[in-house]
Image (tube, rainbow, N blue to C red):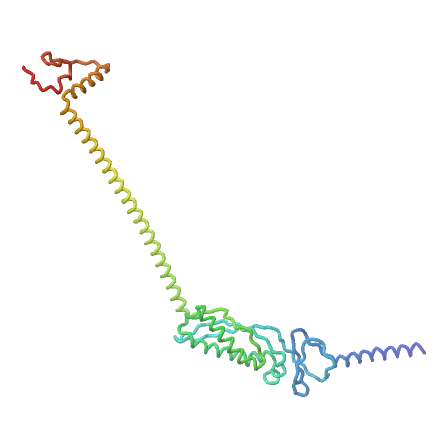
Amino acid sequence: MASANTQRNLVFYVVGAALLLYFGSLFVKTVPPGRVGVATIFGNVVAEGYSQGIHVPVNPLYRWTMYDAREKTHIETANVPSQDQLQTKLDVSVQYRIDGVMAPIILEETGDEVAAVRVHLVPKLRSLLREQGKSIVRAEDFFKEETQENLQVGLTDGLREYLEPKGIIVSAVLIRDITLPPFIVEAIEQKKEREQAVEQEKAELERVRTELQQHVARAEAGREAAVQEAERKRTLADAQAYEITQINNAIARNPAYIQLQSLEALKAISKDPASKLYFMDGSSPNPLPLMHLGDTQTIQR
């Protein structure tokens, strides 16, 4: 009998503990990291949100909507017209986060975070893109660094001013990609090809100019060599003429000079082992061969 009572008491304790835990959990709310919880009761939004962590006690009748307050990126692709009436395709990324303090207002006025982005961020971003495009003269100007910087600054400032009062904080707007109209891309490619052809022609002209300069340098060196050779020959000719003049002067001053030279020639001839035949004039004052050279006497026959 006592055993049956003990078992009934144990069952009551277990059921009571389970009920206590169940109903107790209704008064506890855990908000995950990086989220903000917004409570509603009977269709009314609680004025203050619940940050991450455990909250005790809470009304068990609350219905919860969670907002992710961490940094996110929204990517938008839009055709942006410029002043030349051409449309350029831009891929833009917006870095933003939900303001946790304003999460209850967002829920009451707009809805969840997806609705906030769809209702506020996307339309304003597209509108700003069109407005910023009006300040760009030509479509190809989108590729200029200055144009991109101005576009990013204008989009960032415009979105911040519009979205912060609505609970969306924008940290940056970045241009990811730019796609010009096809015919402009083709024209740019043709322009690049022409520029490359011009550069090749310049390189070829530079090569020809270098070769011509080398030819001119070689011709100049040849001319200088010819001038030096002519100068050398002229100097040699002057030396030879001077030598002849001196010999003639020596002969004129000393008639025996030729006989002296003849005697030197006879010495050289005498050393030659080849057979020789000499004719001597017995009536000459100098009967030896070559010794009569320079005589002013007339040979009588």
